[in-house]
Amino acid sequence: MNSLGRASAIIGAGTMVSRLTGLLRSIVLVGVIGSYKSGPADAFTFANQLPNSVFSLISVGILTAVIVPQIVKATADVDGGNAFISKLFTLGTVVLVVITGIATAAAPWLVHLVAGRATPDILALATALAYWCLPQILLYGLYALLGEALNARRIFGPFTWAPVVNNVISIIGFLILGAVFAPVSTDAADWTPAMINTLGGTATLGIALQAVVLLVFWRRTGLALKPDFRWRGVGLGAVGRLAGWTFLMAFASLAAGMLQGFIISEAAGAGASVTVTANAWLIFMLPYSVIVLSIGTPYFTQISEHAAAGRHDEVRADISRSIRTLLFFILAAVAAVAAAAVPASRVFTKDAEGVTAASAAQSAAVVLLCYLVSLIPLTILFIVQRTFYAYDDTRTPFWFTIVQCVLIVVTTLAAWALYEADVIPLTSLAAAVALGQSIASVLQTLLATWLLHRKIGGLQIGSWMAAVGRFAVAAVPAGLAGWGSSCSQGVPRDGWWQARCSEPSPPRSSASSWSWCTSPSSP
Image (cartoon, rainbow, N blue to C red):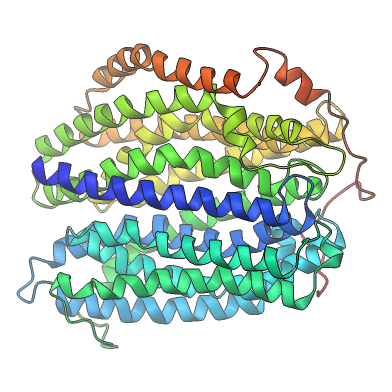
């Protein structure tokens, strides 16, 4: 337990600094190009989310599900897993290069898939930026491969501290963009090639240095990493079979996310759109990353070790202990963030045409609150899903993730239908999509927990629920502190939702329907 505590402290500190510098990075970017009703901001978010989405596919769908448990098992080999890991890294790099090349060549089509409802100027700018951003797929993938291998060897610090380098480089680049091209236009049609190169180049340079940093710490693993194309006879076939399910699962999640972006792009440059949702998600992810990842990641390594050794009682104890520990901290975070939603959102907004910063912050806060509904269920899902992975079961997570994806598609289309029927304004479309995602995540967690209980039993679910009740009472002071922060910044004690909903909705797009089959235009 002491080693778990030390590992959690290292990861927590690194994640905290990483997330705080990430927040500062987003604040600087908002100060330079805006967020609410800013065409360039939405264009950059669309372009930058493409490699991030693929990274999530690789990291969550493949590395966490397959690679970490396999590396843990390979350490029992005579050579400490050296040959296996070298072959694995060689194969992974080849796959990443191929995927990156295909994705970059298909940039116009990918942008259209996630931003097809945006105006032609925003689509053109997003496509130009995507050519800069999509090579990040290779860089993200190498970073994830190196980082997860370090984690599997119980070297937890570098993976969580490396993003700080990326954030610092990005902040410097954004400040240069603001200084050289001031005032930076919030109209996508006004952006020049030099502005595009500065923004896109900055984003990709930061990711490259983030990956390079991990190489500095590789010697601590004791492994001699070298190219090895002899992939037969070392068990990579089993890895491929496991990865097949996770690839399908990750692609389903990616498709659902693209549909969300496509629908939300209707409001690009006109209200709360993809940049607002991205910043709301960033705030949402701060407690998740600092608390859940820092505490849960060492537990996942321990659960994998106990599962590999067949110590099932210890696995059950790890699950119960880790979930109760996570809930203790996450409930206080939920209360504080919910109460301080408006001031937390205000730092990511500024005056836009016809909209004050306060009104934009209120719009963003609604999106944040809709996401926040799923924070507690996702905390539980983190441990539940990774327990399946520890038992080399990627098939079951595939099915309960497919259920979530179907629910996301249904709720996203429902939000679109409500907008088309004039039940909700365009300014509330992003919030409706976010709420639908949270509902899908809640149902996914319930299903996943039930399936894990059927698989290994003895999950002590009653103790989780009792812990939720106790910790909810303890979270009240945190909620009051957050509410006090809201009031101290002049946020009214009531009526801010009404003020948000009274904001006039922008005019509808001239297009009355959308199609997945329309070919995108080149920039």
